[in-house]
Amino acid sequence: MTKWRTTREFCVAMMLACALHASAGEHIPAPTETDLEDLVGESLPYPIKSAKWVANEPPKTNLFVYAIQPKSFRPEFLKLLAESLGVQGNVQQMPASMILDAPGYWIREPNGTNKSSWKSVAFSQRSGSITFTSGEDNHKWDLKTHKPLAHGVPDEKEALQRTLALLPVLGITTNDLEHMPDGKLKYASDTEGTWYNDRYDNWTRKRYIRQINIQFWQKIQDGASVLSIGGGGMLRVGYISEGRLAELEMTFRQVRPVGSASPKTSKELAKMLQSGKGRTFRQYIPESLTITNCTLVYPEANSYTKQDFLWPFYALDAVAVEEGETNGFRIYEPLSW
Image 1 (cartoon, one colour):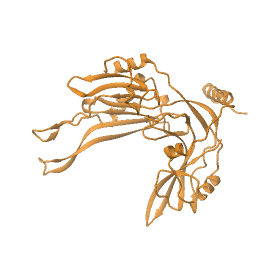
Image 2 (cartoon, one colour):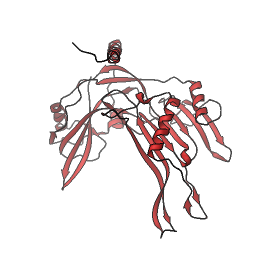
Image 3 (cartoon, one colour):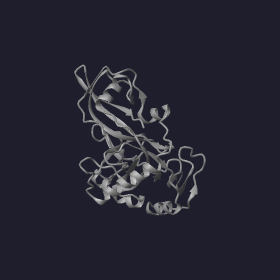
């Protein structure tokens, strides 16, 4: 008999069971070859002759297939978001010329001094993504002193705190974000910069930071990770001089479980590799590999893609020693249901 540690665990399990039962008759299409190429790469070019398994056993539970629910447009939300981010204007339909995002809605505030620039918030009905752009790129250069003018770009800690403060404005909490196995919030940061030669320092090659970005991933379920393809399933926020918000994109899908996939053992996966079954984004895969880790991932495509399902895949991390160097590789194995 299963013992539930908390009432919440019991309720979540019952909701999933009901959802799967209710959708038992729903047809779940397998990903097409185009889907597979976009989400997990090309087929292995040849069988893997030797696949040594030293990883943990593959996850065997919660291998759900999710249907993506179209998000309904709420003009009051977009208006409130615009006010919170300092964008003025009325809600309008996106022009058809915005073929990557349309159909959708946006609020656009023209720049009074630059007709080719504007601030905007937008909602894409194609993917359900939410975006903000400030119209600033922080490419600022002092022509007299020949030095960059960008200053006050936040450090990682400040940028992280600013992004966490934005979550309520976006209608989400940290419970909607992926966490590490130790319970800590999973995030990444990077900077965008410009290289220049400093004439006042012996023409030393230097890089000034224009923008810092913070990335979060959508939480699908405990024990699984989003495989982000071009920003899919992510919240990405960028900051420039004096901590100003430069851009924002959130491509979180609204999902519901509609079925489950069949698990595989490490022996089955090793045999699949030896049969040449698997997908990868790498152009070259050695014929002899050691599998060091196996995780459950859900690929999410970018905001320009209308995605109807989230399919589970095993992600196999592998290493190979060639000419004295150890290199890492990743191979994806689709599951069946």
